[in-house]
Structures are given as structure tokens and as C-alpha cells.
Length: 368
Image (cartoon, rainbow, N blue to C red; front, side, top):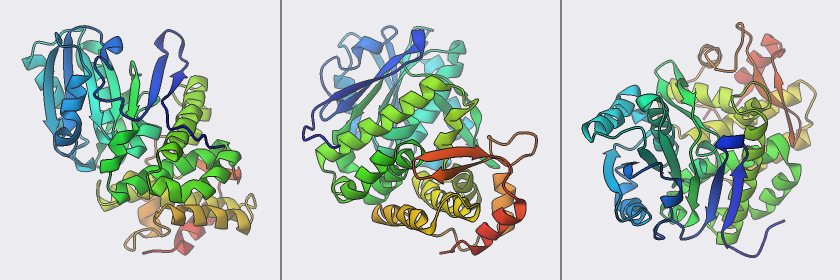
């Protein structure tokens, strides 16, 4: 399945007039005029954070036209900054610079920056252009594609936001060399998710390629990113605003978001919480009779190979989980809706899980 070439790839998210490309490859950021084709006008605001700015801000500027009016905004790092207050700082900077409706925002960073910048772009003057330049594996394979934008609320993750598609996604795989191992593992959780929900052959490949991925082997990384983005683009094209099949992308997220919200945003990385949540979903699927123990063991083993948590936080009770899970965005009419696995590579949305079965699963799941 894997290609020997580490050369660039181009995919498309097919949404009619709002379709856009995903460019994947090494050395893309910093190429002269690499971002120019997707600018709406001369006014450009690059938004990044304190960790990414020293590494890649100048390379981003080098990808813009020399005559562009470029402003920069550097925000604090971390999930705890994903708030309306941070988005207001973006709007303040745009207004103070006198930016008009033909401005373009560039999100340079991970998922937090991408989600906030997209939300700011969706609301500023009722919608302006933005470009995603993701620099973490998690944002490259997941949050930068599909147009979900927003911020967290103390009671729930991503509860305030909008669907607003970027004009393009530029994924420079060279940015991953600066990624801490824990962040790399968090991104691998989302890569594994795609195999679990829709592509058993991709899951098979991942099991054999995990060591190469953790070693940042270029061809393996590009293949994993391309396959993940292709699967997400396919699902987004089918269901842009999550009325049906797109909900499957939330495998592990209902459990994971509960962990993040309860622990305090940033204590667990998003991908770490999703990793534990996917194992909880697999074990619940087994309790429903859909997966056998061999399948659950495969899920556990690949998460372990990616250095992801296999236990929930020690201080979370069954009640803690249930309170947070009831605030999940997928729930309708007070019915808890979970993404579960009929088999590996085949996910489904279920709102009929017996409460006693769910509670028993959470009670029995390891704590660490």
C-alpha cells in the first residue's frame, strides 16, 4: 500500500463551488508565492502561537506575495486558550488594521489555532477567506480539513462554532520534525481512527507502519496523511454539516471529550483522550456482541504501539463520564448517541445502547 516516493500529493475536498485543494509534501512552506493562489485580496493576517511563530512564521511570510499587506498575531499556546476571548483578539487585530471583506486569514499552527482562526473568519464581516497551514499531525490529518471551526466552553468541547471551509490546506510534512513525541502520538490517534471507521486495509497497513511513523519516516508519513485526508474529504463531501455519515468521524470523541472537559482543557491532549475513547468504544461494541476479543485486542495493540493511553483518568467516576457525555453535540432529544464498531473498518451511529451496559463498561474500564 505504501509508496516509495515522499513526493508531494494533491487531493480535493469536493463541495461544488466551495471545493478546495489539500497540498501534502515536504518543503511546501517557504516556497515563493505558495499561498498566493488562494488569497482573496492584498490584506493578509497570519495567526499563530508562541511555539510555532519562532519556527515557521518567517517561512509562512516567504510564501506570500511581496506586495501583500501582511499583519501577524501571535497567541498563547495550548487548548486552554481556545476561547471566545482569544477569538476576540483576532477580531480586534483585524479591525485595528482596517481589514475589509477581501482579507484572508492564515491559520499557522495546530488544531487550536486552526479552529479559532476558522471561527474568526466565519464571523468577521459575516465571512472572509482563510487558509489552513497545519503544523501538527493531528491538525494535518483531521482538524484542518472539513470546515469545523469553534471554541470550547467550560461545560463542553467545541460547543460554540460554525462550519466554514478554508480556501486551501497546505500541509508541509517537514513541520513534523519539531513535534514532541507526545503530540505525534496524539496525531496518530486520529490516523488510526480512519482505519477503524472506514478502511480496514488502511488499518492493516498502519499496524505494520507504526514504527516508521513514530520515527518520522517521510514516505510513511506522507502516505498516512494522504490516506487520512482522502477518507475525511470523502466523508465531508458526502455530509458537510454532520447530518449523517460525518458523525462517524467522532469515534472515541464522546468519551474523549468527557475526559478533556473533566480534566481541564490541555491536561490530556485531544488525541490522547480520543485514543482512550476509541478503546472504550471498541470494548462497548464487544459488550454489544459486535466485536470479538481478538478485534478489541487489535485496537488495544495499535493504540499501545502509537504510545497512546489505554486507561481513563484515575479520578473520573461513572457519574463524571455520564454528566460530560450528555453534553455531546451528537445527542438529540436527550438520547446519548455513540459511534461504535460493527467490525474493524465499519463504524455506526448508535442511540440504543442500554444505559446499564454503558455504565458497566465505564465502571470496568481501567483507570491510570
